[in-house]
Length: 403
Ligand SMILES: *Cc1c(COP(=O)(O)O)cnc(C)c1O
Image (cartoon, rainbow, N blue to C red; front, side, top):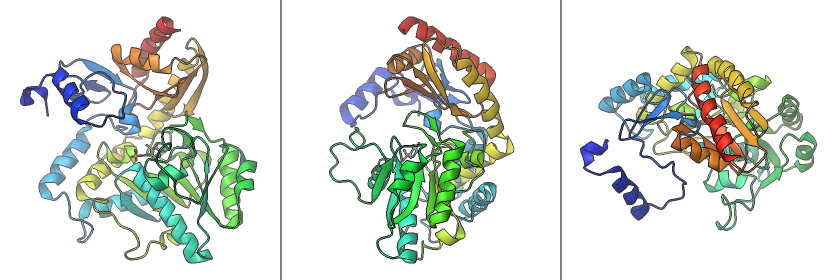
């Protein structure tokens, strides 16, 4: 939908939002009317360089041609059925995803938080089916982020933050431990523990990659105790970190992995994959979703996932990410550059992240702020070194003006 088709001005659109919507977001102050590749465009056709990718979603580029064609093609045939009849895109996508990432089974959801709900439910069901009714305890990390519905929110190790304050009791059965500290995790284990739920790289927490020793140590500990390694790859999955899945950087495999964001190419889809042994706990009627696995989103996802694999966008993320991170380390006032592939956090000495974000929007570079000191960049995985150079120049100027 374009402004000219509606008769509204950009100012009127903003007014409608403030009048009629429950606003929980700090907006970039422009109307995004269209997008293509590495750019978003406002109603005047002015372009904004996209280094947030709809928060790690638009990995195959904005309005990717293959995804657009897949959606157009599918929507005219059949878009929704519930999971009563067999439908074609979900079957083919299931094979594509499972064989690409080396997992046995998939269950479709509609978002990241829903995928994590499914991951938590599957782990608990597996636990209680196999070890008795008390086997439901899950250990997750402090500063983690797993989503905004109650299960995922309760797995999120951020008590006392805006995510959790005011929402009454959260779901019991979770413990939070320091990230990248194997001893802390081992200490939190008890006989009721069924699994350990982690992001391979903490995203919303400020871009903190798990160390090799930690994630491999967690895998070994899970094997030793016969409990489940549950990885939240909602943000890290599908090429973002330089491998198809972030766990491939660590030479390990989870028992359950959740995914969403990039897998849909901009359409709302999420999923979990699990080993055969664990997946068996989801028996007939034990879980479900109205939209999950819809032909429309599965067709889009198949196009997006195929783009990532066929064009080897993970290698591009690895190479361009390395180039960009090296460059960013030379930025004035930087304390630390963290990340993997094109999932990059720049922590500044001073609390200037939000100012940099606003400076960026004004100068047509889109990045996001995490807390007061970190800016996060998760651009489409088609980003080139040239795109990074342009972004770097804006950031360099921003730091000069602000610091
Ligand atoms: C974004 C995100 C979620 C939540 O996904 P939604 O689609 O917003 O529900 C969960 N976990 C991680 C690691 C994320 O980055």
